[in-house]
Length: 484
Ligand code: BG6
Picture 1 (cartoon, helix red, strand yellow):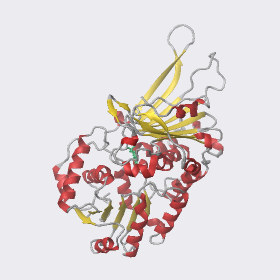
Picture 2: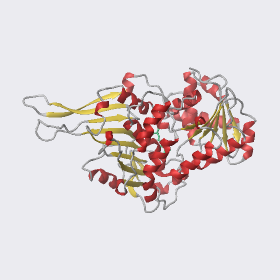
Picture 3: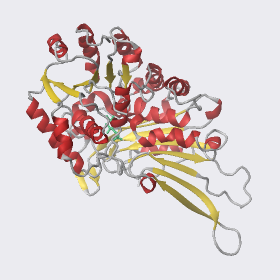
Picture 4: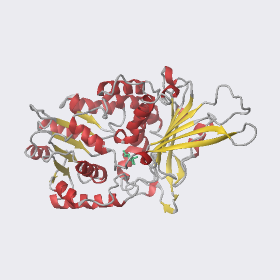
C-alpha cells in the first residue's frame, strides 16, 4: 500500500547515516512504489549546503553505495528516473538544531503530516525535542500525524535514557515516538520470529532443557571510519550492545507473543529483557584494536584514527556473558560479542545444543549446533551427526545450509526501508517501547561502571579479538564459533 503523504525532516542531513543509509533506503522505497506523490524531504544541518549541493552529495553517495558489493544497497546501478523524482522532493535548510530560529523557519515549511528524524549524535535528541515542542511542531491536528524518530544510543545509561524519555514526553505522546533500532529492520532478524514460532522442529528445542549455550556475534571488518569523534563518546558497548545485540537477544529468547500485534510483541520482548541479569564483574571483556593487517591491508590502531585521543581508553570490542532468569533459560549462558577491525564481517546467532542425554555410540559425539546468519550469506546452518558409510557404526559430523538467496529473489534491503515505511504507516511494532531500552541499560550498568576506569586489552586489527574474550568462554569449557 502507498504510505500517507508526509514531510520527512532529517536532522543531521549532511551526516553519514543520511547519506549511507536513510536516503538509499528512501530510494529503495521509491523503486517499490510505496511513496505518495506528495511525500517530501527536508534536510537540516549546520553544514553550508544548498538544495543543489546537498542533492549532489546524496547522488554521489548513492553511486558509491551501489558500487560497494558489501553494502546491502545493491541496485548495481542507480535508475536516473527514480533519482530525478527523488531529487525533486529534497530540499535543504541550513540550521543549528540548538537554535529556536531553526524550528521557526521549519514551522513555516511543514504543513500536514510530518516525521522528524533525529539522525544526529545522542546529545542533540533532547534539544531537538525541545525545539520542535516549543515551535508546536509536535502538535497533531485532526487527520494529520506528527512523529519523532529517535536513533540509538537512546541515552548513555539508565538515568539519561529516562531523562530523555521524560523530556520527549513533555512535548509528545508515547504513540508519536518511534525509537529506532535498525537491526529490527533486517529481514533476517524479523525472520527469527517466523523460524521459531512457525516451526515445531525448532521451537520445542529452544530452551534450557536442550541448549548448552547461545552466542550472539556482530563482528565487523570496518574500523571507526570517519566516526572517530562519535565513537570516542560512545564506544563499542553503547554503540552495539544494549540496543542491537539485546534486540537480537530478545528475538531469540522471548516467549511466543499472543499474536503479532504491537502490544503483544512488545510485551513479550519487554518481559524477557527485564529478566536479563546485571552482568557480573568477571563476565565482561573489553578490547581496543591495535595496528594490524586486515585482509592483506595494513591498518592503523584505533588510537591513530582521526578524531581519536592518542591515549584513548575507549573500547572497540566488547564481550559479555549474560544470564536470563526465566524458567525457559535457567542455566543457559548467553555470550555476546561485538567489535571493529576483526578478521571477518559476521553477524550471527549460534545455538549450541547439549550432547544426547544417553549416548549409545561410545565416547561423546559432537553436539548439534544451529547457526543463524543475519548478514552476508543470510540463512541458517545446522550441524548434526550421521552414520559414516561403511561397516560398523561410526559417526561423522555433517552440515546442512539454507541460504535465503537460493529461495527468494534478492531484494536490496538496508534495514531502514521497512522501518521508515512502518513509521509512515503508523505501525510501531518494529520500534521500541521505553521498557526495551531501559531494561538493557540496567543489565549493562555494572559494565558502564567498571569501564569508567582502567584500559581495554589490545587486539591486533584483523584478529578475532582480545585473548580475554576466549578465556571468558574457556573458563566455562566452551569456545567461540570461528569468525571465518
Ligand atoms: C550502527 C553502529 O548502529 O550499526 C555502527 O553505529 C555499526 O558502528 C552498525 O557499524 C552495524 O550495522 P550493520 O547493519 O552494518 O550490521
